[in-house]
Image (cartoon, rainbow, N blue to C red; front, side, top):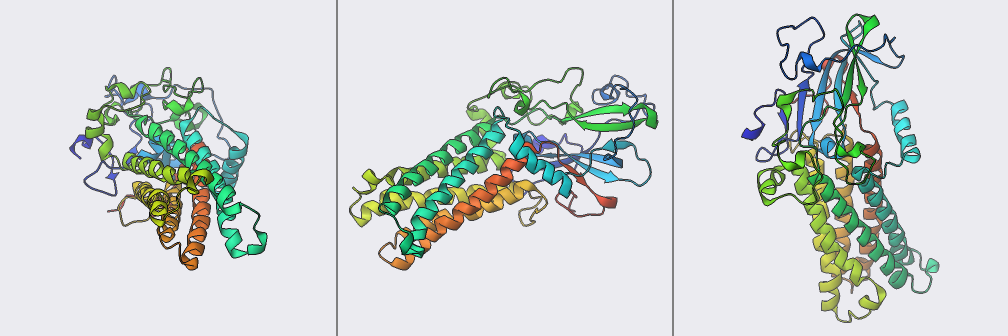
Amino acid sequence: MAHHHHAKGAEFGPFTFLNPTSRRYPLSWKPPGEDSSSEGTPGKSNDLPKPGEPLAKKNDELGAEEVQRLYRTRDNRKGRHAIVVTPTAEKGKYLTPPSTSTAKETLKGIWRMFSTYPYWDVSYLVAIIFTFGSVIWCINAFFVWLPLQDPSTEFPGEIANAGGITAFIGATIFEFGSILLMIEAVNENRADCFGWALEEVLEENGLIRLTPDGCTHHHKNNKNLVGKGKAVEGKPPLDVNMVHDRPASKSASTWTWFPSWDELRTHYFKEVGFLACLAQMIGATIFWISGFTALPPIYDRLTTVAAQNGAYWAPQVVGGTGFIISGTLFMLETQQKWYLPAPKVLGWHIGVWNLIGGVGFTLCGALGFGAANSGCVYQGSLATFWGSWCFLIGSTIQWFEALDKHPVDIEEGGGRISDTQPVA
């Protein structure tokens, strides 16, 4: 962990032998007139917001005494920029947007899901593809489970044909989504990006307003899918010492399809999120084999139990295990310690639901080995059913998360213990 010693904030991560996954920093500049000694020092007064038009306080803005930026590796991959705000009854130093976890802001976020389609944002594509794939799996689960639950509903060829074909489509979509997840992981923003614009509010004697802007992540570049991040004109990075790992490497500036072995060894294999994406991709690839062998013309030729076990059930168990590992790692990535749940983080819920979904898919394959027993067949089909719905819930939350680029967390009086509150 020595390569992170330059950080000025508290750092956390679920595993001490891997890179930290979250850090907190105070805003590193001072309001005008408070600190003239640092003229010309990077990250200090040159980063001051330019005085804008005199602006009155907007009605839903909060006065805040303290603002901390919250860097999380998952947020960084998804192009999100979280801040933690300590509100104040008096007039504080800052004006910030309201908490994003209120009912009103959450409803706005749900409306965003149906009204915005940033198809150039790889994080959005990942979420949409997994949601679509999960819907296909839910349809598949009805085809294979409902006839067992209620035989009168069965139509000819339902389990073999409709079930087999939807399994193939679902497995293929999951594989495609996993490849994009991998591309997202290797194109994380290596140079730190604060993603908030700072402007002086003249009327309010030296108040500073934070507004969502100033992001250099590739997610904002709508010129092409594999876009570079945009440098924001006239706004240097907020704090030059905060650069993550090796910003001088090519990956800091350009889109990359595959990292070098050196980058894998020194950086990616120490990132919990990358390991989660890797497990997901390996799992989806092996799982795809069972999607292929589920196709009726192929499945019909698996005439022996050994052939069915080897070509159809085993890949489900191995692939599903990959989903369990990735769901667990995605969940742990958002936690400060491996044993402390983080229910206030969207990414934590996504990991949990995908983990349960992976358990369902793995169980389905494991119970398939006992296909001679009707109870195993029934429970296996049912496991696909509830597993698919769990994947759908996780994917839908991920869709919401991918469009929620500027989360604001409010700490009342600084005393609330949440995922953002440092744990001793």
